[in-house]
Image (cartoon, rainbow, N blue to C red; front, side, top):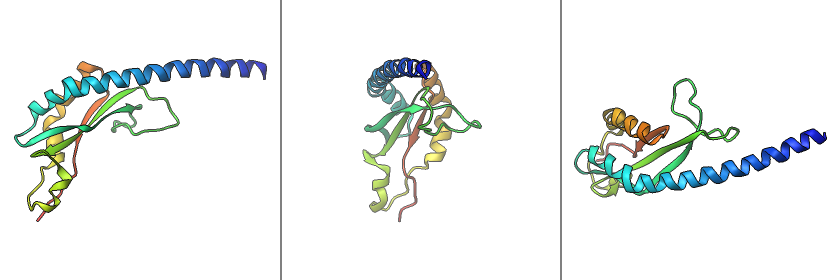
Length: 140
């Protein structure tokens, strides 16, 4: 039992160090997202669309399973970071177009169009991925 207690104390110390490093890196990525990555992604978007920096996030990333986008599993340790970028259309959240009587952009098609560019930016920064999102729906 004594050996297990010592190993647990060592684990706790390592976990605290790792958590401090994770928070520091996440903060650095948040700054890079705002100052560097969002402006680059905005240049790739069609006219009228932009990224909402205040609603975009640096998220913990986990192991990929079955080639699908990583889903949070709070029973595992995150292995990196990914960006989740909210899109705006004409400066408004896409979901706000509900009352404007227009057609919102097709986010699925936009994701396909941007896939390679977002993968390239992800690799450049060592991220596990960059996703753009909105709430596309036909209004009218």
